[in-house]
Image (cartoon, rainbow, N blue to C red; front, side):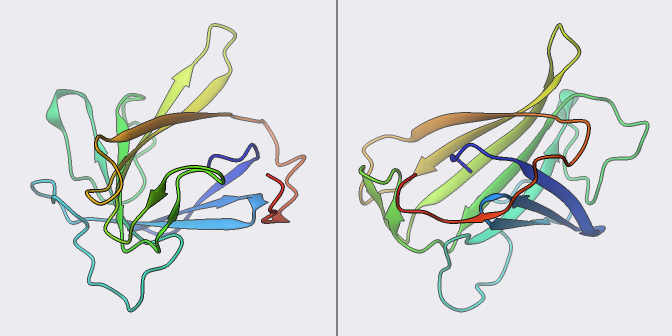
Length: 164
């Protein structure tokens, strides 16, 4: 989700959020944890070998401590809060094409926040925190911003490239 591009967000069902990125034709699938205390790691049973997208568990974190809602927010929900996604079961790889590696034990926590600009435009800010006891002495933290567009114009899924 670090390559410039467009996102398409859909709800395949009440407990699954799907985010498709046109850069690299990536698909992220976030499964919502049942309500209750936040798990330290995803409450999803490992499904075989690690993958490039891993296993991701999501939960809404709302102002005032509201947590644990499953599924899409209701239309009258407050326009504040964060979607927290914790991902494990990742294949080992690199944080950047020419950078530091991460191991199969990496823990990735993402916070998805919607911000409204003075112009009225909306921006999705994705803050990513990578923790890896093998290769990182401290968490690697980075953010990415996506501007909301009124239509799907420009949606052009493109396979991964070694030149990005």
